[in-house]
Image (cartoon, rainbow, N blue to C red; front, side, top):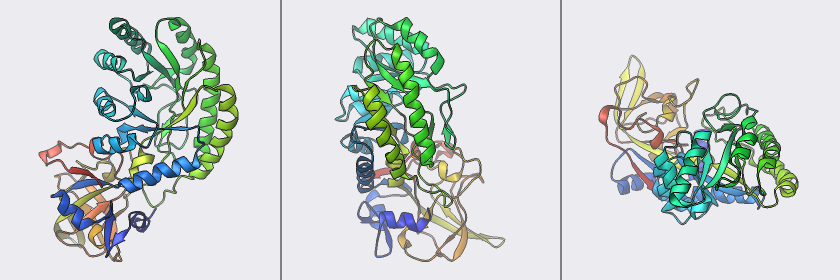
Length: 408
């Protein structure tokens, strides 16, 4: 998607980008300093509404908090989605502080410590088991607390999902228990006092291909159908994962949600309804819910020309928005969409490099981008900043102040 399409999604007021209904310069004055992240609650709501309209009504939406754990964002989405997925004890506490019931919070991720597991058992959240070590720790915590732990097995499937930004299933993985090991483990721990609810299969993330996502969902249901035979009661929890991607560069095409939804309708209304009548299928989404609703705003502090190349030096950089610099998983660096936010409607006619304030050539936010002529105090806006931004960045690097975050 081109920057103009992102500008259109947020809207403008007298030529300025609008975020949460406010012109950017006014929002910057309200925040009080740059850089900052801003998340538009209207766009968050629109994304949830779009998913509700497209997906089968039986499908439950789970927000993967790791994408954006800002408390205000989590509080807002907790009122709009059906579940929250967390990946640490701190995230679990943030989720427990919302209106979301504990039994609708899931705790996933390898390397859960005994202390974290004890907290999760005491809270009554669903613990997604990643290893036999975790099973033993859960059982111990349940015995000590006199609580029947609520667990689901995270399964490392025997298939991989092509086209994902990160592959999280298939082959050797630190995530989940290999599918072929699950039946024996379930038999061994049957009757142990844990409440086995079902299974979670998350094969890959950031996928823009509707057919690949649908194929993964079909294969997941087939796999879970086999594994469910090892349960001593009907399956009640069926987490199909997510993996819905968003476009980060001009070459990316947005995910065809309608195509995914059409295949999911057939799967849910047919196979899942027949095989798992007591389980509502769960789709777990992070960046697809929040990624496009956020912007990173940074101010130009210097403009310089070096051997014919113009550099806009801003007060932010890769220490806040690592992904936009290309240092968070990009094999080949490509620019995130960005604009001069206080003149978002102006035509671009100058080639520049937008660089951060860090003392490293890696701190590059825009490589040879075409912008309207920008000068000191102009506001540069980087889109697609609502997911894996601040908390996925090396904020302590070189000791610069942390940016603000606002939900508007």
